[in-house]
Image 1 (cartoon, helix red, strand yellow):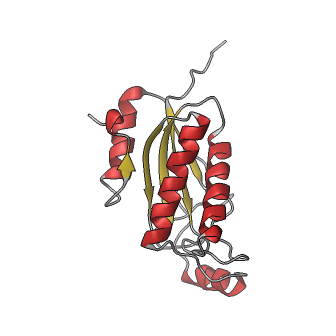
Image 2 (cartoon, one colour; image 1 turned 90 degrees about the horizontal axis):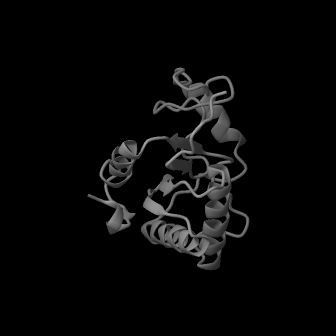
Length: 171
């Protein structure tokens, strides 16, 4: 019997509502294109246009103030829950978080961050009461080896332009 080790952490990413649709030229994943190593959905401008027409709300983008608020909310939530936050980077159309293994599913972490961030954005008037802020799910990539954490953190911190991270976690 093979016993799987616990992951050392997760790279969790989600997008803002309407900013990265199926068929986007940057690459996207749907139920038929979601197995590891399989190609993304081919770019399809017609599919993207059709999805835009069917959206219930306009696309949501994070302003600088909203990005700062989302970052602070995630940092605070991690402190309260005792989760080891290694890096967070809220961009105008998506959020990346690298967190150490905490004994809970990464989908649960993402759900809590999205819910609390939405609540704070609405409290500050940075999102309307009925505005859809986030896409339905996101990406939860497992990091299995400690040596693989540094490149993941570097991607989130350096490959995304600007971010915050715990200084004690950087070389």
